[in-house]
Amino acid sequence: MALVLVVSVGGWFGYQQWAGPNCTGELKLSLAAAPEIAPAVQATAAQLVTDGAEVDGLCVAVEVTAAEAVDVAAAIAGQHGVSLSGVGQASGGATLPNVWLPDSSSWLLRLRQQAPAFEPQNGASIARSPVVVAMPEPIAATVGWPQKQLGWTDLLKTITTGTQLRTGIVEPSRDAAGLAGLLSLAGAAQSSGAQATQATTAALRALATGRAAVRDELIARFPRATDPASMASSLGAAALSEEDVIEFNKKKPPIPLAALYLEPAPLSLDYPFAVMPGTEPDKVAAAQQLFTALDSAGFHNRLAGQGLRGPDGTWGDGFVAPRGAPSPAGSTPTPSSGPNPGGTAAGIKNAAAIEQVLSSWSVATQSGRLLAIIDVSGSMNAKVPTANNATRMTVTLETAKRGLALFDDSWALGLWVFSTELVGTRDYRSLVPIGPLSSSRGRLENGLATIKPKRGGDTGLFDTALAGYKAVQEDWEPGRVNSVLMLTDGKNDDDNGISQAALLAELKRIEDPERPVQVVIIGIGNEVDKAELDSITKVTGGGVFVTEDPAKIGDIFLRAIALRPTAPR
View 1 (tube, rainbow, N blue to C red):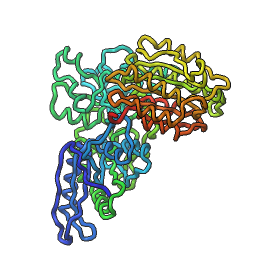
View 2: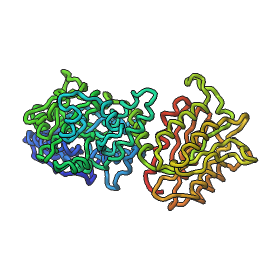
View 3: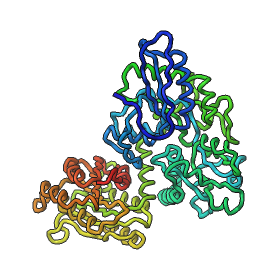
View 4: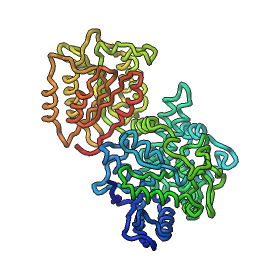
Protein backbone atom coordinates (compact mmCIF):
# COMPACT_ATOMS: atom_id res chain seq x y z
CA MET A 1 0.00 0.00 0.00
CA ALA A 2 1.39 3.41 -0.91
CA LEU A 3 1.68 5.95 1.90
CA VAL A 4 1.54 9.75 2.01
CA LEU A 5 4.90 11.42 1.50
CA VAL A 6 6.52 12.66 4.70
CA VAL A 7 9.82 13.84 3.19
CA SER A 8 10.58 17.19 4.80
CA VAL A 9 11.83 18.82 1.62
CA GLY A 10 10.44 21.75 -0.34
CA GLY A 11 7.00 23.31 0.15
CA TRP A 12 3.65 21.84 1.09
CA PHE A 13 0.57 22.94 -0.79
CA GLY A 14 -2.02 21.24 1.41
CA TYR A 15 -5.25 19.44 0.74
CA GLN A 16 -7.70 20.91 -1.72
CA GLN A 17 -11.10 19.71 -0.55
CA TRP A 18 -14.30 20.89 -2.16
CA ALA A 19 -17.06 18.34 -2.28
CA GLY A 20 -18.76 17.95 -5.61
CA PRO A 21 -22.57 17.81 -5.67
CA ASN A 22 -22.77 14.05 -6.29
CA CYS A 23 -20.13 12.63 -3.96
CA THR A 24 -19.81 11.86 -0.27
CA GLY A 25 -16.76 10.95 1.72
CA GLU A 26 -13.23 11.68 0.65
CA LEU A 27 -10.53 9.96 -1.40
CA LYS A 28 -7.09 11.45 -0.69
CA LEU A 29 -4.47 11.31 -3.43
CA SER A 30 -0.91 12.26 -2.50
CA LEU A 31 1.54 13.54 -5.10
CA ALA A 32 5.21 14.52 -4.76
CA ALA A 33 6.45 16.83 -7.50
CA ALA A 34 9.73 18.47 -8.38
CA PRO A 35 9.64 21.94 -6.75
CA GLU A 36 9.67 23.90 -10.01
CA ILE A 37 6.57 22.14 -11.39
CA ALA A 38 4.66 21.74 -8.12
CA PRO A 39 2.81 25.13 -8.24
CA ALA A 40 1.42 24.42 -11.72
CA VAL A 41 0.36 20.90 -10.70
CA GLN A 42 -1.24 22.18 -7.50
CA ALA A 43 -3.26 24.81 -9.34
CA THR A 44 -4.52 22.25 -11.85
CA ALA A 45 -5.33 19.77 -9.09
CA ALA A 46 -7.28 22.44 -7.22
CA GLN A 47 -9.32 23.17 -10.35
CA LEU A 48 -9.95 19.45 -10.85
CA VAL A 49 -11.32 19.13 -7.32
CA THR A 50 -13.37 22.33 -7.63
CA ASP A 51 -14.96 20.89 -10.76
CA GLY A 52 -16.19 17.94 -8.70
CA ALA A 53 -13.73 15.12 -9.34
CA GLU A 54 -14.97 11.86 -7.83
CA VAL A 55 -14.30 8.13 -7.90
CA ASP A 56 -17.11 5.72 -7.04
CA GLY A 57 -19.00 8.42 -5.17
CA LEU A 58 -15.97 9.62 -3.18
CA CYS A 59 -14.81 13.21 -3.51
CA VAL A 60 -11.21 13.42 -4.67
CA ALA A 61 -8.80 15.46 -2.51
CA VAL A 62 -5.27 16.03 -3.77
CA GLU A 63 -2.24 16.75 -1.62
CA VAL A 64 0.69 18.16 -3.62
CA THR A 65 4.10 18.22 -1.96
CA ALA A 66 7.20 19.85 -3.43
CA ALA A 67 10.01 17.33 -3.00
CA GLU A 68 13.47 17.02 -4.52
CA ALA A 69 13.66 13.95 -6.74
CA VAL A 70 16.79 12.66 -5.03
CA ASP A 71 14.98 12.43 -1.68
CA VAL A 72 12.02 10.50 -3.05
CA ALA A 73 14.38 8.24 -5.01
CA ALA A 74 16.26 7.47 -1.80
CA ALA A 75 12.98 6.54 -0.10
CA ILE A 76 11.99 4.24 -2.97
CA ALA A 77 15.42 2.62 -3.04
CA GLY A 78 15.26 2.07 0.71
CA GLN A 79 11.84 0.46 0.43
CA HIS A 80 13.30 -2.03 -2.04
CA GLY A 81 16.45 -2.65 -0.03
CA VAL A 82 18.79 -1.17 -2.66
CA SER A 83 20.81 2.01 -3.04
CA LEU A 84 21.56 4.35 -5.93
CA SER A 85 25.11 5.50 -6.56
CA GLY A 86 25.73 8.77 -4.74
CA VAL A 87 22.18 9.10 -3.41
CA GLY A 88 22.56 7.81 0.15
CA GLN A 89 19.88 6.79 2.58
CA ALA A 90 16.38 8.22 2.95
CA SER A 91 15.53 10.02 6.16
CA GLY A 92 13.88 7.86 8.77
CA GLY A 93 10.40 9.36 8.26
CA ALA A 94 10.39 9.22 4.48
CA THR A 95 7.58 7.20 2.91
CA LEU A 96 6.05 7.24 -0.52
CA PRO A 97 3.28 9.19 -2.30
CA ASN A 98 0.66 7.71 -4.59
CA VAL A 99 2.08 9.66 -7.56
CA TRP A 100 5.62 10.85 -8.11
CA LEU A 101 6.53 13.63 -10.54
CA PRO A 102 10.35 13.74 -10.61
CA ASP A 103 12.13 16.08 -12.98
CA SER A 104 13.53 13.27 -15.12
CA SER A 105 12.82 9.73 -16.27
CA SER A 106 16.46 8.97 -15.53
CA TRP A 107 15.38 8.48 -11.90
CA LEU A 108 12.91 5.79 -12.94
CA LEU A 109 15.54 4.09 -15.08
CA ARG A 110 18.12 4.04 -12.30
CA LEU A 111 15.63 2.69 -9.79
CA ARG A 112 14.40 -0.03 -12.14
CA GLN A 113 17.94 -1.22 -12.75
CA GLN A 114 18.63 -1.66 -9.05
CA ALA A 115 15.13 -2.80 -8.08
CA PRO A 116 13.42 -4.67 -10.96
CA ALA A 117 10.27 -4.99 -8.84
CA PHE A 118 9.82 -1.23 -8.99
CA GLU A 119 7.27 -0.86 -11.80
CA PRO A 120 5.29 2.37 -11.62
CA GLN A 121 2.31 2.88 -13.91
CA ASN A 122 1.96 5.50 -16.65
CA GLY A 123 5.35 7.29 -16.72
CA ALA A 124 4.41 9.64 -19.56
CA SER A 125 5.88 13.12 -19.65
CA ILE A 126 3.75 16.09 -18.62
CA ALA A 127 6.34 18.85 -19.14
CA ARG A 128 9.79 19.50 -20.45
CA SER A 129 12.85 21.65 -19.85
CA PRO A 130 15.88 21.28 -22.13
CA VAL A 131 19.28 20.94 -20.46
CA VAL A 132 21.55 23.77 -21.53
CA VAL A 133 25.01 25.08 -20.75
CA ALA A 134 24.46 28.28 -18.78
CA MET A 135 27.09 31.00 -19.22
CA PRO A 136 27.22 34.67 -18.22
CA GLU A 137 26.36 36.53 -21.40
CA PRO A 138 29.77 38.27 -21.80
CA ILE A 139 31.54 34.90 -21.58
CA ALA A 140 29.04 33.27 -23.94
CA ALA A 141 29.72 36.00 -26.49
CA THR A 142 33.40 35.06 -26.54
CA VAL A 143 32.55 31.56 -27.78
CA GLY A 144 30.22 32.76 -30.54
CA TRP A 145 26.82 32.95 -28.83
CA PRO A 146 24.18 33.52 -30.04
CA GLN A 147 25.12 33.29 -33.73
CA LYS A 148 27.31 30.18 -33.63
CA GLN A 149 25.90 26.69 -33.13
CA LEU A 150 28.21 24.98 -30.64
CA GLY A 151 28.64 21.31 -29.81
CA TRP A 152 29.75 19.30 -26.80
CA THR A 153 33.09 18.64 -28.46
CA ASP A 154 33.64 22.42 -28.53
CA LEU A 155 32.94 22.66 -24.81
CA LEU A 156 35.15 19.63 -24.10
CA LYS A 157 38.06 21.28 -25.89
CA THR A 158 37.47 24.55 -24.06
CA ILE A 159 37.50 23.07 -20.57
CA THR A 160 40.38 20.63 -21.07
CA THR A 161 42.97 22.81 -22.83
CA GLY A 162 44.10 24.94 -19.93
CA THR A 163 41.73 27.86 -20.47
CA GLN A 164 40.57 30.00 -17.56
CA LEU A 165 36.91 29.09 -17.98
CA ARG A 166 35.59 28.03 -14.58
CA THR A 167 33.16 25.16 -15.06
CA GLY A 168 30.77 23.64 -12.56
CA ILE A 169 28.20 20.92 -12.18
CA VAL A 170 25.65 19.86 -9.60
CA GLU A 171 26.59 16.43 -8.25
CA PRO A 172 25.32 14.31 -11.19
CA SER A 173 24.37 11.31 -9.08
CA ARG A 174 21.89 13.58 -7.27
CA ASP A 175 20.78 16.01 -9.99
CA ALA A 176 19.18 15.11 -13.33
CA ALA A 177 20.42 18.19 -15.21
CA GLY A 178 23.94 17.59 -13.96
CA LEU A 179 23.65 13.97 -15.08
CA ALA A 180 22.44 14.99 -18.55
CA GLY A 181 25.38 17.36 -18.95
CA LEU A 182 27.83 14.73 -17.71
CA LEU A 183 26.47 12.14 -20.16
CA SER A 184 26.80 14.56 -23.06
CA LEU A 185 30.34 15.60 -22.15
CA ALA A 186 31.39 12.00 -21.57
CA GLY A 187 29.93 11.08 -24.96
CA ALA A 188 32.01 13.79 -26.60
CA ALA A 189 35.12 12.53 -24.82
CA GLN A 190 34.46 8.94 -25.88
CA SER A 191 34.47 10.05 -29.52
CA SER A 192 38.10 11.16 -29.14
CA GLY A 193 39.43 7.92 -30.60
CA ALA A 194 42.66 6.62 -29.10
CA GLN A 195 42.67 9.46 -26.56
CA ALA A 196 39.17 8.69 -25.27
CA THR A 197 40.24 7.57 -21.80
CA GLN A 198 42.50 10.57 -21.27
CA ALA A 199 39.85 12.96 -22.62
CA THR A 200 37.18 11.46 -20.36
CA THR A 201 39.42 11.68 -17.29
CA ALA A 202 40.38 15.28 -18.07
CA ALA A 203 36.74 16.27 -18.56
CA LEU A 204 35.61 14.65 -15.31
CA ARG A 205 38.35 16.27 -13.28
CA ALA A 206 37.74 19.68 -14.85
CA LEU A 207 34.08 19.50 -13.88
CA ALA A 208 34.86 18.16 -10.42
CA THR A 209 36.80 21.28 -9.47
CA GLY A 210 33.55 23.23 -9.57
CA ARG A 211 31.01 20.67 -8.42
CA ALA A 212 28.29 21.62 -5.97
CA ALA A 213 26.09 19.53 -3.72
CA VAL A 214 22.86 21.34 -4.68
CA ARG A 215 21.69 23.54 -7.53
CA ASP A 216 21.28 26.74 -5.52
CA GLU A 217 24.89 26.49 -4.38
CA LEU A 218 26.12 26.25 -7.95
CA ILE A 219 23.92 29.06 -9.27
CA ALA A 220 25.14 31.35 -6.50
CA ARG A 221 28.64 31.13 -8.00
CA PHE A 222 27.71 33.00 -11.17
CA PRO A 223 29.01 36.61 -11.23
CA ARG A 224 26.92 39.19 -9.40
CA ALA A 225 28.97 42.21 -10.49
CA THR A 226 30.26 43.44 -13.84
CA ASP A 227 33.85 44.24 -12.85
CA PRO A 228 36.61 42.07 -14.38
CA ALA A 229 37.72 40.65 -11.03
CA SER A 230 34.23 39.32 -10.27
CA MET A 231 33.94 37.85 -13.74
CA ALA A 232 37.30 36.13 -13.53
CA SER A 233 36.65 34.57 -10.12
CA SER A 234 33.07 33.44 -10.76
CA LEU A 235 31.49 30.44 -12.42
CA GLY A 236 31.71 30.58 -16.20
CA ALA A 237 29.75 27.54 -17.41
CA ALA A 238 27.46 24.89 -15.94
CA ALA A 239 24.92 22.36 -17.15
CA LEU A 240 21.51 23.51 -15.91
CA SER A 241 17.94 23.34 -17.08
CA GLU A 242 16.42 25.99 -19.29
CA GLU A 243 14.03 26.69 -16.40
CA ASP A 244 17.00 27.46 -14.12
CA VAL A 245 18.25 30.08 -16.58
CA ILE A 246 14.79 31.63 -16.95
CA GLU A 247 14.35 31.86 -13.18
CA PHE A 248 17.82 33.35 -12.73
CA ASN A 249 17.20 36.03 -15.35
CA LYS A 250 13.76 36.87 -13.92
CA LYS A 251 15.56 38.44 -10.96
CA LYS A 252 17.24 40.98 -13.26
CA PRO A 253 20.84 40.17 -12.25
CA PRO A 254 23.66 42.55 -13.25
CA ILE A 255 24.92 39.88 -15.64
CA PRO A 256 22.20 37.69 -17.20
CA LEU A 257 22.82 34.11 -18.14
CA ALA A 258 22.86 32.85 -21.71
CA ALA A 259 21.46 29.41 -22.44
CA LEU A 260 23.59 27.50 -24.93
CA TYR A 261 21.72 24.70 -26.67
CA LEU A 262 24.63 22.43 -27.54
CA GLU A 263 24.46 19.64 -30.09
CA PRO A 264 23.77 16.79 -29.90
CA ALA A 265 20.91 17.78 -27.62
CA PRO A 266 21.30 16.28 -24.14
CA LEU A 267 18.54 14.47 -22.30
CA SER A 268 15.82 16.95 -21.41
CA LEU A 269 14.13 17.05 -18.05
CA ASP A 270 10.86 15.35 -18.95
CA TYR A 271 8.78 15.20 -15.73
CA PRO A 272 7.23 11.71 -15.91
CA PHE A 273 3.89 11.09 -14.18
CA ALA A 274 4.62 7.90 -12.25
CA VAL A 275 1.86 6.15 -10.29
CA MET A 276 3.58 4.19 -7.55
CA PRO A 277 3.34 0.39 -7.39
CA GLY A 278 0.82 -0.78 -4.82
CA THR A 279 -1.46 2.24 -5.18
CA GLU A 280 -5.09 1.21 -4.58
CA PRO A 281 -7.31 1.00 -7.70
CA ASP A 282 -9.54 3.91 -6.65
CA LYS A 283 -6.49 6.15 -6.23
CA VAL A 284 -5.14 4.96 -9.59
CA ALA A 285 -8.44 6.10 -11.09
CA ALA A 286 -8.12 9.48 -9.35
CA ALA A 287 -4.55 9.78 -10.59
CA GLN A 288 -5.76 9.15 -14.15
CA GLN A 289 -8.23 12.01 -13.83
CA LEU A 290 -5.45 14.30 -12.67
CA PHE A 291 -3.20 13.12 -15.48
CA THR A 292 -5.91 13.97 -18.02
CA ALA A 293 -6.28 17.43 -16.48
CA LEU A 294 -2.55 17.93 -16.87
CA ASP A 295 -2.95 17.38 -20.62
CA SER A 296 -4.79 20.66 -21.15
CA ALA A 297 -4.18 24.12 -22.53
CA GLY A 298 -4.65 25.56 -19.06
CA PHE A 299 -1.87 23.45 -17.60
CA HIS A 300 0.32 24.21 -20.62
CA ASN A 301 0.00 27.92 -19.81
CA ARG A 302 0.60 27.34 -16.12
CA LEU A 303 3.84 25.58 -17.06
CA ALA A 304 4.86 28.64 -19.05
CA GLY A 305 4.52 30.74 -15.92
CA GLN A 306 6.99 28.41 -14.21
CA GLY A 307 9.50 28.58 -17.08
CA LEU A 308 8.60 25.11 -18.34
CA ARG A 309 7.51 23.77 -21.73
CA GLY A 310 4.86 21.26 -22.65
CA PRO A 311 5.99 17.66 -23.19
CA ASP A 312 6.31 18.19 -26.95
CA GLY A 313 8.83 21.01 -26.46
CA THR A 314 6.47 23.86 -27.31
CA TRP A 315 5.57 26.58 -24.82
CA GLY A 316 2.40 28.21 -23.59
CA ASP A 317 1.31 31.82 -23.14
CA GLY A 318 3.68 33.98 -21.16
CA PHE A 319 6.78 31.81 -21.61
CA VAL A 320 9.91 33.97 -21.67
CA ALA A 321 12.27 32.00 -23.90
CA PRO A 322 16.01 32.50 -23.54
CA ARG A 323 17.66 34.10 -26.52
CA GLY A 324 18.21 31.53 -29.26
CA ALA A 325 15.90 28.93 -27.71
CA PRO A 326 14.53 26.45 -30.28
CA SER A 327 10.88 25.44 -30.28
CA PRO A 328 10.37 22.55 -30.01
CA ALA A 329 13.80 22.25 -28.38
CA GLY A 330 16.20 19.55 -29.45
CA SER A 331 15.53 16.43 -31.43
CA THR A 332 13.42 14.53 -28.91
CA PRO A 333 10.65 13.95 -28.13
CA THR A 334 8.71 14.19 -31.39
CA PRO A 335 5.14 15.47 -31.03
CA SER A 336 2.53 12.83 -31.85
CA SER A 337 -1.22 12.71 -32.32
CA GLY A 338 -1.71 10.72 -29.11
CA PRO A 339 -2.54 12.29 -25.75
CA ASN A 340 0.24 13.84 -23.71
CA PRO A 341 3.17 13.01 -26.00
CA GLY A 342 6.68 13.40 -24.69
CA GLY A 343 9.81 11.74 -23.47
CA THR A 344 9.63 8.73 -21.18
CA ALA A 345 12.24 6.51 -19.62
CA ALA A 346 12.22 4.26 -22.67
CA GLY A 347 13.41 7.09 -24.87
CA ILE A 348 16.68 7.88 -23.10
CA LYS A 349 19.98 6.18 -22.50
CA ASN A 350 19.85 2.81 -20.83
CA ALA A 351 20.43 2.57 -17.09
CA ALA A 352 23.67 0.61 -17.49
CA ALA A 353 25.19 3.47 -19.51
CA ILE A 354 24.11 5.95 -16.86
CA GLU A 355 25.61 3.91 -14.02
CA GLN A 356 28.84 3.43 -15.97
CA VAL A 357 29.29 7.18 -16.40
CA LEU A 358 28.39 7.83 -12.75
CA SER A 359 30.90 5.18 -11.64
CA SER A 360 33.62 6.83 -13.73
CA TRP A 361 32.68 10.14 -12.17
CA SER A 362 32.88 8.70 -8.67
CA VAL A 363 36.30 7.12 -9.22
CA ALA A 364 37.72 10.21 -10.90
CA THR A 365 36.43 12.72 -8.38
CA GLN A 366 36.46 11.01 -4.98
CA SER A 367 39.45 9.98 -2.93
CA GLY A 368 39.88 6.56 -1.37
CA ARG A 369 42.34 3.99 -0.04
CA LEU A 370 42.24 0.69 -1.88
CA LEU A 371 44.10 -2.61 -1.95
CA ALA A 372 43.53 -4.41 -5.26
CA ILE A 373 44.09 -8.19 -5.17
CA ILE A 374 44.10 -10.09 -8.49
CA ASP A 375 43.64 -13.85 -8.89
CA VAL A 376 46.59 -15.47 -10.74
CA SER A 377 45.42 -19.08 -10.45
CA GLY A 378 45.92 -21.30 -13.48
CA SER A 379 42.33 -20.91 -14.66
CA MET A 380 43.01 -17.26 -15.44
CA ASN A 381 44.75 -18.58 -18.58
CA ALA A 382 41.39 -19.72 -19.95
CA LYS A 383 40.43 -18.18 -23.29
CA VAL A 384 37.49 -15.78 -23.60
CA PRO A 385 35.69 -16.38 -26.93
CA THR A 386 33.80 -13.08 -26.65
CA ALA A 387 37.12 -11.20 -26.34
CA ASN A 388 38.81 -12.56 -29.47
CA ASN A 389 40.15 -15.49 -27.43
CA ALA A 390 42.23 -13.29 -25.16
CA THR A 391 42.78 -14.90 -21.76
CA ARG A 392 40.84 -14.01 -18.64
CA MET A 393 44.08 -12.60 -17.30
CA THR A 394 44.58 -10.32 -20.28
CA VAL A 395 41.01 -9.03 -20.16
CA THR A 396 41.27 -8.39 -16.41
CA LEU A 397 44.59 -6.56 -16.62
CA GLU A 398 43.48 -4.36 -19.50
CA THR A 399 40.43 -3.35 -17.49
CA ALA A 400 42.59 -2.64 -14.44
CA LYS A 401 44.94 -0.45 -16.48
CA ARG A 402 42.05 1.61 -17.83
CA GLY A 403 40.63 1.95 -14.35
CA LEU A 404 43.97 3.07 -12.93
CA ALA A 405 44.02 5.99 -15.37
CA LEU A 406 40.86 7.39 -13.78
CA PHE A 407 42.30 7.59 -10.25
CA ASP A 408 43.78 10.95 -9.38
CA ASP A 409 46.81 11.41 -7.17
CA SER A 410 44.73 11.87 -4.02
CA TRP A 411 44.08 8.12 -3.92
CA ALA A 412 46.20 5.59 -2.06
CA LEU A 413 46.50 2.23 -3.84
CA GLY A 414 48.23 -1.09 -3.35
CA LEU A 415 48.49 -4.24 -5.47
CA TRP A 416 48.61 -7.92 -4.49
CA VAL A 417 48.22 -11.15 -6.45
CA PHE A 418 46.99 -14.49 -5.10
CA SER A 419 46.71 -18.17 -5.97
CA THR A 420 48.15 -20.91 -3.75
CA GLU A 421 51.67 -21.14 -2.35
CA LEU A 422 53.00 -18.03 -4.03
CA VAL A 423 55.49 -17.30 -1.24
CA GLY A 424 56.30 -20.58 0.45
CA THR A 425 52.99 -21.81 1.82
CA ARG A 426 51.47 -18.32 1.66
CA ASP A 427 48.81 -17.79 -0.99
CA TYR A 428 49.39 -14.10 -1.73
CA ARG A 429 52.20 -11.76 -2.70
CA SER A 430 52.44 -7.98 -2.38
CA LEU A 431 53.61 -6.31 -5.58
CA VAL A 432 53.11 -2.70 -4.48
CA PRO A 433 52.27 -1.74 -0.88
CA ILE A 434 49.41 0.69 -0.29
CA GLY A 435 50.72 4.19 -0.79
CA PRO A 436 49.96 7.57 -2.36
CA LEU A 437 49.27 7.26 -6.05
CA SER A 438 51.22 10.47 -6.57
CA SER A 439 54.42 8.52 -5.93
CA SER A 440 53.45 4.96 -6.85
CA ARG A 441 51.59 5.23 -10.16
CA GLY A 442 54.58 4.05 -12.19
CA ARG A 443 55.19 1.11 -9.85
CA LEU A 444 51.55 0.07 -10.12
CA GLU A 445 51.63 0.23 -13.91
CA ASN A 446 54.81 -1.85 -13.93
CA GLY A 447 53.32 -4.26 -11.42
CA LEU A 448 50.27 -4.87 -13.58
CA ALA A 449 52.55 -5.47 -16.57
CA THR A 450 54.37 -8.29 -14.75
CA ILE A 451 51.33 -10.27 -13.62
CA LYS A 452 51.01 -13.76 -15.10
CA PRO A 453 48.90 -16.75 -14.03
CA LYS A 454 50.60 -19.51 -12.03
CA ARG A 455 50.48 -22.73 -13.98
CA GLY A 456 48.53 -25.27 -11.94
CA GLY A 457 47.85 -22.73 -9.20
CA ASP A 458 44.63 -23.05 -7.24
CA THR A 459 42.54 -20.33 -5.53
CA GLY A 460 43.50 -19.43 -1.98
CA LEU A 461 40.58 -17.06 -1.62
CA PHE A 462 39.86 -17.27 2.11
CA ASP A 463 43.42 -16.84 3.40
CA THR A 464 43.96 -13.92 1.03
CA ALA A 465 40.69 -12.18 1.90
CA LEU A 466 41.57 -12.28 5.60
CA ALA A 467 45.13 -11.06 5.04
CA GLY A 468 44.00 -8.24 2.78
CA TYR A 469 41.36 -7.12 5.26
CA LYS A 470 43.91 -7.03 8.07
CA ALA A 471 46.43 -5.13 5.93
CA VAL A 472 43.93 -2.36 5.12
CA GLN A 473 42.64 -2.26 8.68
CA GLU A 474 46.14 -1.99 10.15
CA ASP A 475 46.95 1.38 8.56
CA TRP A 476 43.35 2.56 8.34
CA GLU A 477 42.96 6.24 7.40
CA PRO A 478 40.10 8.45 8.59
CA GLY A 479 38.17 10.53 6.08
CA ARG A 480 38.46 7.94 3.31
CA VAL A 481 36.72 4.78 2.22
CA ASN A 482 39.21 2.04 3.15
CA SER A 483 38.56 -1.01 1.03
CA VAL A 484 39.78 -4.26 -0.45
CA LEU A 485 38.99 -5.08 -4.09
CA MET A 486 39.39 -8.74 -5.06
CA LEU A 487 39.12 -10.08 -8.61
CA THR A 488 38.73 -13.85 -8.96
CA ASP A 489 37.50 -16.43 -11.44
CA GLY A 490 37.03 -19.30 -9.00
CA LYS A 491 35.95 -20.47 -5.58
CA ASN A 492 38.23 -21.22 -2.64
CA ASP A 493 40.00 -24.55 -3.21
CA ASP A 494 42.93 -24.33 -0.81
CA ASP A 495 42.61 -27.44 1.35
CA ASN A 496 45.46 -26.25 3.58
CA GLY A 497 43.99 -22.82 4.26
CA ILE A 498 41.43 -21.40 6.64
CA SER A 499 37.88 -22.73 6.39
CA GLN A 500 34.91 -20.57 5.43
CA ALA A 501 33.43 -20.79 8.94
CA ALA A 502 36.75 -19.84 10.54
CA LEU A 503 37.23 -16.94 8.10
CA LEU A 504 33.81 -15.46 8.85
CA ALA A 505 34.28 -15.90 12.59
CA GLU A 506 37.66 -14.16 12.47
CA LEU A 507 36.33 -11.29 10.34
CA LYS A 508 33.52 -10.77 12.85
CA ARG A 509 35.99 -10.84 15.71
CA ILE A 510 38.35 -8.23 14.30
CA GLU A 511 35.70 -5.95 12.78
CA ASP A 512 35.97 -2.48 14.27
CA PRO A 513 33.02 -0.11 13.70
CA GLU A 514 35.38 2.81 14.30
CA ARG A 515 37.73 1.60 11.54
CA PRO A 516 35.47 0.07 8.87
CA VAL A 517 36.99 -1.77 5.92
CA GLN A 518 34.69 -2.81 3.10
CA VAL A 519 35.45 -5.74 0.82
CA VAL A 520 34.34 -5.62 -2.81
CA ILE A 521 34.67 -8.78 -4.88
CA ILE A 522 34.40 -9.11 -8.65
CA GLY A 523 33.63 -12.65 -9.82
CA ILE A 524 34.72 -13.46 -13.38
CA GLY A 525 33.28 -16.39 -15.34
CA ASN A 526 30.87 -19.17 -14.44
CA GLU A 527 33.07 -20.98 -11.92
CA VAL A 528 32.67 -18.54 -9.05
CA ASP A 529 30.41 -19.26 -6.10
CA LYS A 530 28.45 -16.07 -5.48
CA ALA A 531 27.04 -17.34 -2.19
CA GLU A 532 30.59 -17.95 -0.98
CA LEU A 533 31.60 -14.42 -1.91
CA ASP A 534 28.43 -12.90 -0.44
CA SER A 535 29.16 -14.56 2.89
CA ILE A 536 32.34 -12.46 3.16
CA THR A 537 30.86 -9.10 2.26
CA LYS A 538 27.86 -9.61 4.56
CA VAL A 539 30.35 -9.47 7.42
CA THR A 540 32.65 -6.74 6.12
CA GLY A 541 30.32 -4.52 4.15
CA GLY A 542 30.93 -3.89 0.47
CA GLY A 543 29.45 -5.95 -2.32
CA VAL A 544 29.82 -8.72 -4.88
CA PHE A 545 29.68 -8.18 -8.65
CA VAL A 546 29.64 -11.21 -10.92
CA THR A 547 29.85 -11.44 -14.71
CA GLU A 548 29.73 -14.84 -16.34
CA ASP A 549 31.26 -13.37 -19.49
CA PRO A 550 34.79 -12.17 -18.59
CA ALA A 551 34.70 -9.83 -21.58
CA LYS A 552 32.14 -7.76 -19.68
CA ILE A 553 34.33 -7.15 -16.66
CA GLY A 554 34.72 -3.53 -17.75
CA ASP A 555 30.98 -3.04 -17.29
CA ILE A 556 31.20 -3.77 -13.57
CA PHE A 557 34.79 -2.85 -12.68
CA LEU A 558 34.19 0.87 -12.16
CA ARG A 559 30.88 0.24 -10.40
CA ALA A 560 32.72 -2.00 -7.98
CA ILE A 561 35.46 0.55 -7.28
CA ALA A 562 32.95 3.36 -6.95
CA LEU A 563 30.94 1.49 -4.34
CA ARG A 564 30.63 3.60 -1.20
CA PRO A 565 29.27 2.57 2.20
CA THR A 566 25.62 3.54 2.51
CA ALA A 567 25.87 4.05 6.27
CA PRO A 568 28.52 3.81 8.99
CA ARG A 569 29.00 0.24 10.04
